[in-house]
Image 1 (cartoon, rainbow, N blue to C red):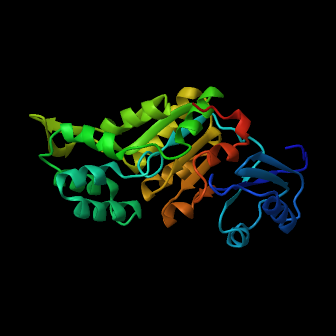
Image 2: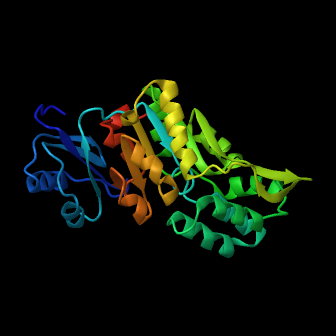
Length: 293
């Protein structure tokens, strides 16, 4: 961004199938009396501005796109910490496992309450895992093969940040059986999650203690930043539920991705329409910087 006077930039991102028009970019720039503008890709642009601005009116005026404001200084982050379920992948693994066990309605109801922050995460996880006791371990492979895919832009996000020197960690309140596979597929350097327990090839209905939940995600951020010798301002975190709240608040750029209201209210940026490459645009990457395969 060439405008030296700009302290912030408005970052506008749109869904891949929709695209972002030059007219929309111009209209937003005129609405905020902004400075220079730069197209970052077919679905994104940034517009220089001197101060943070009220976003709600802009978002209401342009309902088909995401509009966010980020500081110019320190935009590119050195550490990515991402949630998995409903963030890097489009489903909640526990709900899909429960479907194979024939108890999805019961488990999904608990999941939804936990995501909204209405019930304690650790207790809710133990309650849900108890409901799938007896399911053969082999069923987890079927869940992964049949139900688990990366969200659009996930692999590009991780591989691009890694290629530019960032450390990428998948930290989930879900299960290592899935995080290990999702992390490898997306390109994360490491993954952390809860470990399901088995006996005679079947789920016991328990997880290894202690349960990795909201506090453990924040602990992971502190541990990784200390190991890397960086500050929290150099972290990008992304999640979708109340379990990610502390993680989002502690990061220099905390992103709510298709998130519950409790997380949206606390996030630095909100992505509801664009895919996960929007997190690259928020950091000032252009489409030509992306690592794809």
